[in-house]
Image 1 (cartoon, rainbow, N blue to C red):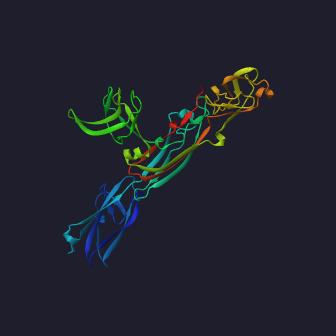
Image 2 (spheres, one colour):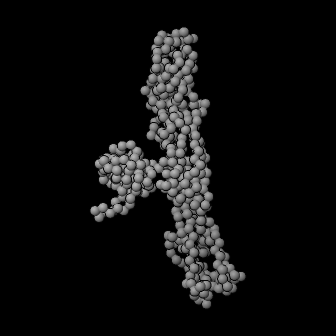
Image 3 (cartoon, rainbow, N blue to C red):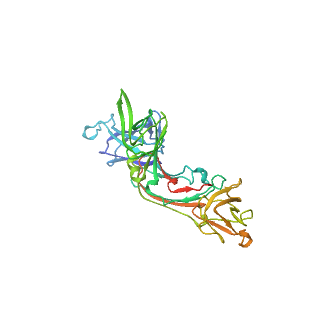
Length: 398
């Protein structure tokens, strides 16, 4: 039965004139009030439905309420002891259970460690999909997002799309805490192993070296009379801070399914650069437009990163950006760049002032498109994270 509640008919079959008493109790111990059609605390006479079968069946509509967590109901039928009615097969009662399951929310989150390089945090809004566990079919998620480079003095140096996103860029993240330190050991003890399974990668921890894979997970090991939880890693680690947080990733749809049972399929993701994201700025008066100079003054520096290519009339081929100086007003205001080699624009009209310079490799925006099917959501809310830093590199000033 769905979380939102439902009106359902209870049908009791029997011989003509058979009498019964029906009670309904939920997993919180509340009884159904057949007069007010609601569950109440404590048992009162209204919680006993006495009835007599006519025409072979008795039917009563029950209003089950909306719930926030999984709830079970027991429908208990007994023969009316004041009559000679009996239940077939000499049973004392008939007890039928109904489970009302809360919805599961599967969230797609966009993650970066470079928050200062994006205009929003997170770079794009999380996408939450609510699934009802009362139905067997899954859901198909299709969404788009635009990631925009910051225009601050510290972060407005463009975004470089290194490659297309792939299945392993989608991860499930789980954490636990270290239970005693380790010294050059492949095994470690942790306080909990919830949502940690073999195949996951340890990506963050005190003095961590690399990203070792979890090879084995052991629970309730009795060591010196104490139950411990132990993990075996693919490489030895010296984890030197007891109680520190350890972060694990299940990478890609297969490992996510193994770790938490959430089945994702048909993951299709792509990234592209819109035309509006191409970086172009005008050359303005300042130095570096006459004589031989590597400094170029621009009306803005937004979207320009170190190593970006430069193109404009009169410029030698192969020139790149060596460094960027954005003014205090941010990269959207006038600033300067240093070029990889000195240039002489004396022969250009107005010494190049007003020319439009185009910068490559880094862009002001990246468009993302993600779609996937959720086949087995389970009953626990889950977040799947797309690691943007795996395929997008923010530009730097120098």
